[in-house]
Amino acid sequence: MDETSCPINIDAAGQRARRISGYVTLGFAVAIGLYMVYADAPRWARFAVGPPLLFGFLGVLQAQRKTCVVLAAQNRRNLGHGIEKVDSVGDAAQLRQQGMSVFVMSLALAAFWTVGFWIFP
Image (cartoon, rainbow, N blue to C red; front, side, top):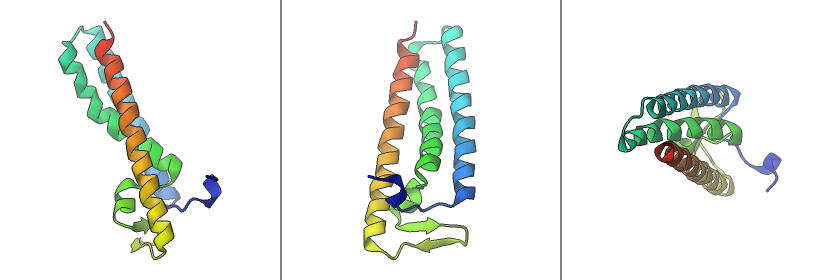
């Protein structure tokens, strides 16, 4: 699908906030994961990087797709003048699909990198 035809539910400020928080959280998670590998932490303890990785990827992907997962699930948007309901049934359905896609991709990326930290000797 052409990105220009996809509805959005967050404005530029929302995208910027999610992008910044996503990259900061990813940096934190990677730093903790690398430290755990360096310090030879028990492998089960390395799973602790999973949640920060998930939240980091969520932030970055929401900014990239211009879609807030929570707002999409609630059929709402925030385009700079407060939270409002999405009136178009078609747009609401597409936003829910985009939100689910963002969540699933974030979960897959977080799982992949968490396993990577887990298997690293």
